[in-house]
Amino acid sequence: MEKTYIQDLHRHAGEEVQLQGWVSNIRSSGKVKFIVLRDGTGLVQGVMVKGQVPDSLIEKFETLTQESSLSIKGKVRKDDRAPGGFELDLTDIPHIYNIAHEYPITHKEHGIEFLADRRHLWLRSSRQHAIMRVRHRIIKTIRDFFDNRGFTLIDSPILTPAACEGTSTLFETDYFDLGKAYLSQSGQLYGEASAMAFGKIYCFGPTFRAEKSKTRRHLTEFWMVEPEVAFNDLEDDMDLAEEFLECIVQTVLQNCGPELKVLERDTTKLQNVKKPFPRITYDEAAKILHDKGLPFEWGSDLGGTDETVVSEQFDRPVMVHRYPSEVKAFYMKRDPQNPKLALAVDVLAPEGYGEIIGGSQREDDLDALLTRIKEQHLPESAFEWYLDLRRFGSVPHAGFGLGVERTVSWICGLEHVRETIPFPRMIYRLTP
RNA sequence: UCCGCGGUAGCUCAAUGGUGGAGCGUCCGGCUGUUAACCGGAAGGUUGUAGGUUCGAGCCCUACCCGCGGAGCCA
Image (cartoon, rainbow, N blue to C red; front, side):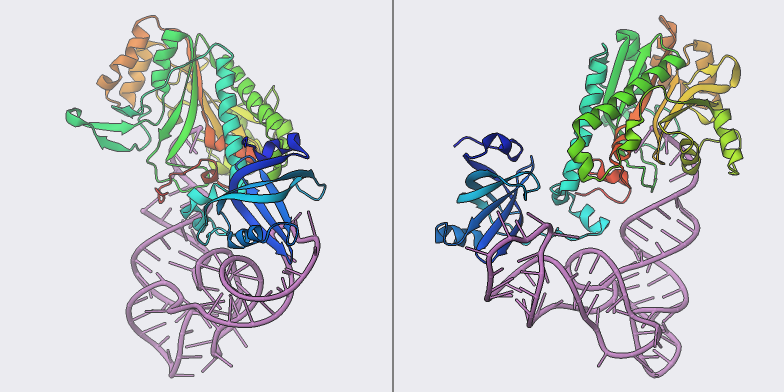
């Protein structure tokens, strides 16, 4: 018999179909038996009445447990009582693949630690299913966005010889006779090299930070997409980031309505995410914080609370640009109008979700870049190839990085980024 | 690394320093439309670990372990 999936049942009303999946729940009301089947595309309830089906079928039903795997056969019937609009009048259980042992995740509430230890099973729940579907849509939209605009995907290496930005703590590993290698914390420097070859590029892959960050916004392994465009300045960079974020949010809204409903996400605040986004300088952000009475010192980076307070002033993502150069990376270009400022931009998501994009116009002048490298005591030899980009046809260029997990967390309205990635890696969690 | 909160049945949580309970899950029974079904019954405990105070400690004290949240750092 042809394979049918639950999401397609509306096309088979009145027909007999066979489904394969797992028992999400079983219920019984005396002689009426119910199986709620999950097949990855949805849930559907199968019904049978003792006396109207063979006793052998009832006997099979009695052996089933939560998460047992099986195939069921039945006639599709439209039913207003069903959450999905359709039910199955069961005629057979052709095959039971496995009678599941006692399943640890029940339909009651569980603590986060208990669920995290069983992440491999937790992914089966409808909430996690919804989050992963939104994540998938976001990633697909990211790729489509750049692919449709003439960007070339250039993947950066994960094993790197030195720190990209020189600040973060990196994961270290032995690399044969060449000494130490480090897991990449950013593909950006390689992105710059690629932009000088292809004009418009993006790299998209996992990145690693060995910082002992313990917050709802941090993972040790996370995904980042980093576009880089030759001949773009900071304004162009912000234009791109703005259009990019609008596209992601609006595409998710158009395609993931059922998922956002499962997550009980209030989408009215997401509807607002349309360009233009407010653009304020770091100085203006500092003024907002002072006016709110926060103890903020000019020259320091925005903390988590600072970001929340600033973003609360706006109804959509806000772009904060021109940060003090001391708090930003060596490769960011200084503002010609004020050398104390870097041509950097952070995009802060609404509702307290904080920085989801960090970007800048890059330093394209060889001497200026050499000065920065010396000032920050970075190993010049490791950056020779990067300096070459300024020796051979240097041009203005800019780019940014978007953190996928923070974006998923924001769009889904989650408490913690650990739910946004199938198998999260955090300082105290390497399993499952 | 620092600060704060927590650890009791398989799970989620109660329990004034005085006999450790409930709901869910499991098992048994009942129910002809259940939606985290419901009703009745049963099993299920070295209260994170090690000390201490006390006639008596899940509760108070000390140390340690583990987790959660935050700071710093960042996406």
